Length: 208
Image 1 (tube, rainbow, N blue to C red):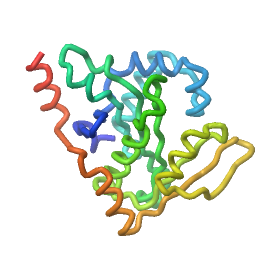
Image 2: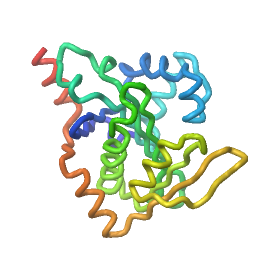
Image 3: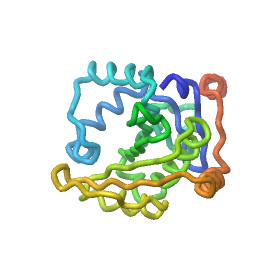
Image 4: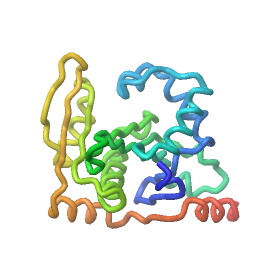
């Protein structure tokens, strides 16, 4: 999505940055994993197809994608961004007639970062960004029935189960954003800082 092409979101333990060509090789390696393919309902792509996908996501108006970085590693300017990558998070505007409805998808690809609150922090940050910058009024999450950890996380964040599809083996959860939910989301991400990505990269490279 062009609107977040130069946006960096800094949280407590993570940094969210736009998905660029620099991130593609690491992402491509992740997606060779049968486990991640199953969790994300994805098919393996060639490296060139992955580059094409990155360019498409950057230009499409209905996909907002950030790469998740370990903030502690990001603060070490001797490391490049590819070495700091943890996963990715996406907002898909799924209804052309209603751009306020969005599907939220998060992938913590690095096993060592799972179960440590990364998913919850990133989800709160992304929902806050979606509400404040994209005008989202309803979030949906479609999760494989066997992905009990993700289902439990979204329910803890007050998503409600609305349907189960046995054919595709997935559950759909939703959260409608009224004024009280909006306030709660913004408060939960109050420590999130939005920074110009280009300036942050220049500052980081300058301190190396």
